[in-house]
Image (cartoon, rainbow, N blue to C red; front, side, top):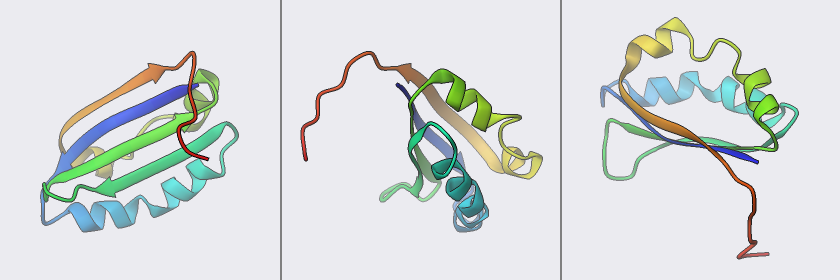
Length: 96
């Protein structure tokens, strides 16, 4: 399993438009082979931050979906980013 997690920062006045522009990407990801979860969400306390969480069944699934990455327009809107991939070898279910 692969988890992609972190955050990006955009101008606070652009955050809502940025997230609306990602709606189709989230839908595509959630329907992509190997996607277990995919979320982009406005941070509750930082008006410039967008939290990222993705969970995939394999590295191949991540790479197949990711392709070229964000569009040029999305990349231009990003002020900073801190996102990492984590390979998970074991998990324990804590809720049912």
